[in-house]
Structures are given as C-alpha cells and as structure tokens.
Image (cartoon, rainbow, N blue to C red; front, side, top):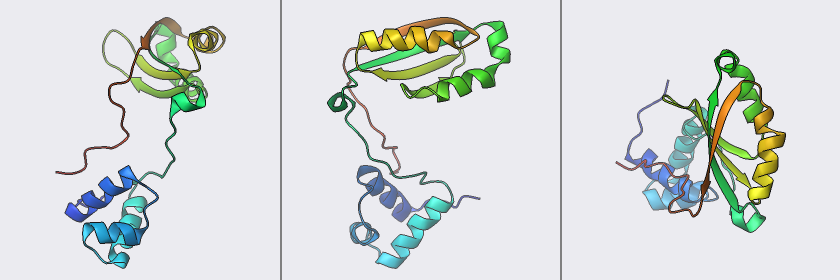
Length: 156
C-alpha cells in the first residue's frame, strides 16, 4: 500500500528528479528536514516503488544517436493474438526507447533512436519488419526536439 505524499515528499522527489546524485543531507537542507527523517522518507518511497531507480541521463546526439523516429505499428488479426510475442520482441531491441499500446487506428507507438536514417532503415528491414504479426509501420522522423524531460510534475 502506498502512503499519501506530503509536501516534503514532493519536494524531495522534485530535487531527486533534477539531480539524483544529491546526498540525503543536501536534500534535507533544501527541504527543511534533518538528515535522518529525510533519508527515511527516501527509503520509504523506494520501498513503495515511487522511486523506481536512479540513472544517468545521456545526450543522445553527443554519443552519435542523431536520428529520432516515432513509428506507428499496426498488427494484423493474427498478430493481435500474439501480443506477448510482439512485446517481447520490442523489448529486445535497444533502439526502441519507448513503446506504448494505443487505442485507435494503430496498435503501438514506438520511440526509436539511431545514428542516422540509414541506420534506421537497417533496423527497420533487419529487425522491426521481421517481427511476426506486423501489418503496417508508419515512420515519422523528428526534425528537432522542442521539449524533452524525464521530470514528472510532482509539486502541487
């Protein structure tokens, strides 16, 4: 069971989303708590799964992943019956950063990153199009990024 988040919890979460390397002492100072209660709150939120993990965010372009594609995937009737097979295949592709099940004209939306269009073409023909049950894929190239964040709006 999850407990209700109070203003201290929300402040802690906002700080951790901005910089997960902050110590509990640094966080405690910024939210107005002593270190021990702050640390206990962080541990509780980890145990409850509110805090899922801590990661290092990379600049995709600085490591050569210059192309971002959004692919709308529609499965055929047979493919829909093998939903698990499709999702397992997608989870195995490191190029696919996100995958969402949709309601409407298409079944899935994928966010894919590659070095360039040629790399996406190879990924498409050698991996994605080989997944059984796919009827149609519409690929949309992102030209530029206006906003990209991993921070959830936790402050009320």
